[in-house]
Length: 364
Image 1 (cartoon, rainbow, N blue to C red):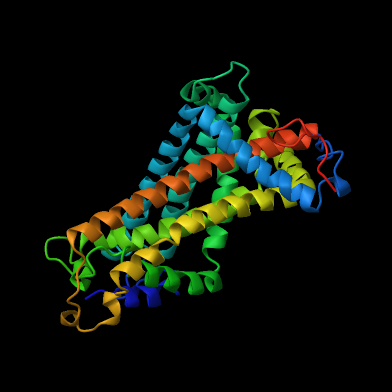
Image 2: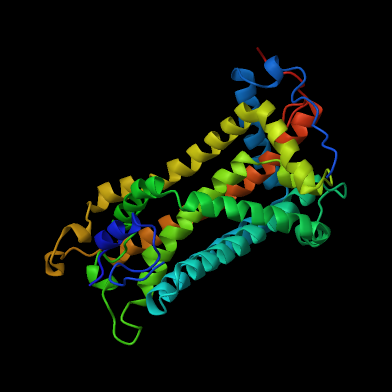
């Protein structure tokens, strides 16, 4: 029987294969203008620059409310990550059933990473072009189609991000902590709606494993790790896509320009990211209230399986599903706001004006 606790132990080895299977596994660079010319230290610190970062998040929210068709970005990004979850599950199944070599496994990991990152980068380019369009309320799909002219450059940037993501993916010490933490959380209600360990047992007719095992928790957990890594990479390089689609720069110039601008505006970017992260974390942590009302129960702590007798009723399952829906919607809407905020910070760094206002100098 496959237990989540076993999976957690296997996670520390960073191998996709289940623990019961043993197998080997030259352009001229133009730096951007100084950010926030009127701000102290060029936007490098102080409560004023933090206010600019939070202002970018609030301005991004207002932009999304005024132009709701940008929610197409939210929906499509969600579908891309859903596809990544299924892809991660498929890679686990391939690793278990076919036992490919280590090089083949790495190649498959990279291809899935590249496909997902490219889709997200392309969607982000369409989002940036939609917001900056001079047509007023431009069509998101119209601008997304217009982003095709930057396809080659965006693909090259996606390759860079995918390689960086693969490198971070293989940092063993980070996942040794994060992997078991995730498996522990996902084994609890409301993440485990049945609280029945037999849900993940071996099922005849499906290659010896339940299909649900490959998608949840394995595929889902690795998709979360994938999302966390690439979110970090996007936060560290928030201005590359605007430089490409608005400044019409090559990747080399866009990356250098993004890091130069990031050096000037890192406090604002960090403040914006933390502000949006607090919102998502607050919604996510409401599961503690649900647990407090329902009663904490982790089926994997009770062994053998017959010891677990408490199963959620239909009402609690409905509440759990509503919680899932709320968390996912908030997370992807906040991601959309973050993309808009990155463009606002890019524009404010160019103009010296606070996002969403005519203010040209943060208060001391």
